[in-house]
Image (cartoon, rainbow, N blue to C red; front, side, top):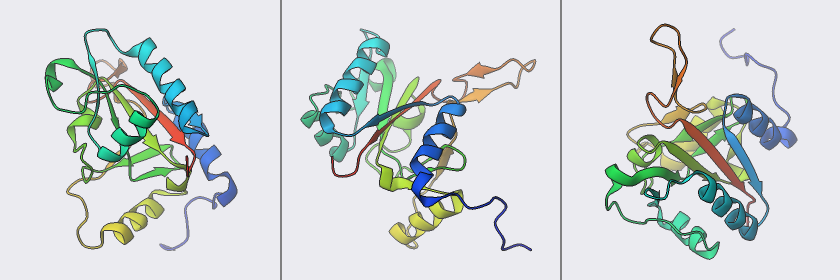
Length: 189
């Protein structure tokens, strides 16, 4: 039977909680914010603790820039000195997959591909309405949104970058960010 689901269906009412649990299980940092004020407070504290003084926090998507400006969170909006100073990048995502704790990231946004891969720390800002049960649900949602003009790349990011290619020693950040953080901002905030 090629049509039947492999896993039992997830309860729709628990998708966000299931996503958060699975995201944290695979090494992601998760913050839930009900309001823009909570987001600003939590993100400023996160940056104060983790952003080196000589490095920058980059945000290139206009909608995210507007949110962070309203939340009083400073950021670098241009690509000036990006390669030399990119410690943290913040992007949006296409979907959050509850079953695997994965993020679906595409270069269709102003952030492109670099901001989610190049900095040592990647932050994603998403909404509960973006949580779907399965990878197939995320792909169907993207097809509904983009039609035949799908982005040139889709990345299913499941936790921080890791590899154990050499002598079976686990290394974080070998092929991308060594830290992955998600701020889930309530819809409507």
